[in-house]
Figure 1 (cartoon, one colour):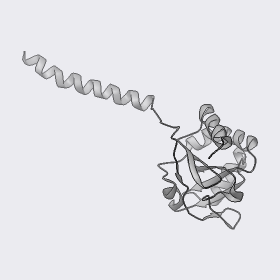
Figure 2 (cartoon, one colour):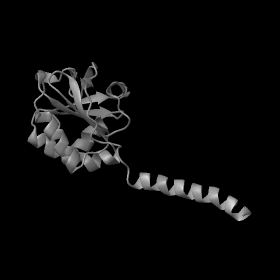
Figure 3 (cartoon, one colour):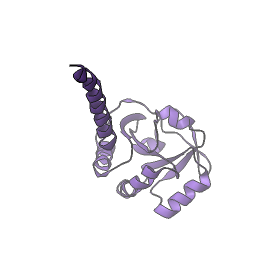
Length: 173
């Protein structure tokens, strides 16, 4: 009987450990978070000078905003999907270089290709915080009125790239 009392907590710890390992290997990213809140009223400095804000986006057209960094491995992994989005939706994809040096961002984009209409700088992370960023990369689709209508938490893949395209062209009331 005493052995069973000892084995139960050990079995419970083992089960919780296996569940934790499973969640780490196969996370439920919840990546297609539909939101309906205003984009932050934050003026970013552009890499080539000037300012940009996304509440509403430039020209009042729907926009994709991707927060990335040169030091971010998942940012590099998702880059091919950003190239596809930039080609499919010219003039609607914007990058925000998060907590990174402009020259490192330029080298990153020179190496992989630059899909962005413009690149904004967020060296201190204040704009990312206003977006609700939890970590790069993250992608937001913003309506022409300045509402965040889709938030992809984590790197893009083929399914999330498709969701971004659909949200960008979906009619909004």
